[in-house]
Image (tube, rainbow, N blue to C red):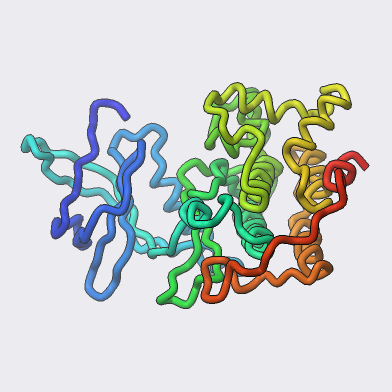
Length: 339
């Protein structure tokens, strides 16, 4: 973050026209505050002036490009973006960037912590994951890759807006434009720095390969398995390189037994449809458009065919009591991957 430090804003302090109410959280790149302007309450996110890479400018650009699209319900509204100068405790003047966005509800990582076994019931896990595929499709269709998909970057709507059943995709600071203005795809770079969170990052991130649409879906799939099953094979591994080795064991370049063991550790105990979806994702190439519609359909059909209700979601009134899905055939998900 360089020498420039981000000033801490206090309740009652003004950031241009926005009045700070309280601090909501902080991270390596800045902080988030609850703020008000007239009757409007919103979230104000800050970052240092010399942030490298500058995340808020990309976030604002993505939200602006998403505004008004058909699937816009999955994305927050950007109310304001700007720059302000405040005094730090030592009396030094500090200038910083900020963005103001509409408020959303709890993030998926907070919701999953409230659940027994850190997993949702099947209807919720699959239903909310289908919404996320729809959001990823919308983002990819306007030419962006997210590159940091994880439960903390997805949230539900607010109860007072009657949006507890709506999934929001958040945090586009790591996004990258992969389409040119004429709709053609940019050529991949020879090498790309790691982007994302090791736990959910695609194999491409671990081998410094340019991200593509396939990789957003691979990160999504790891989330799906975790919220459905309650764990990932590398869930307790802290070393980024070791996590990458776990994932790479299912690559076609590995021997069949190694691949089978890797796939089994990832999706054993999941519906066989998960194996089919993973097979599709792993088969994609850099320029290939994923079949988002098929992924959503096969998962919805699983719920329908097994009479598993999607709603109410676990956090809604009356939710969380749907029980588990019928046990999948032994090895069914793994077999469907290699079929």
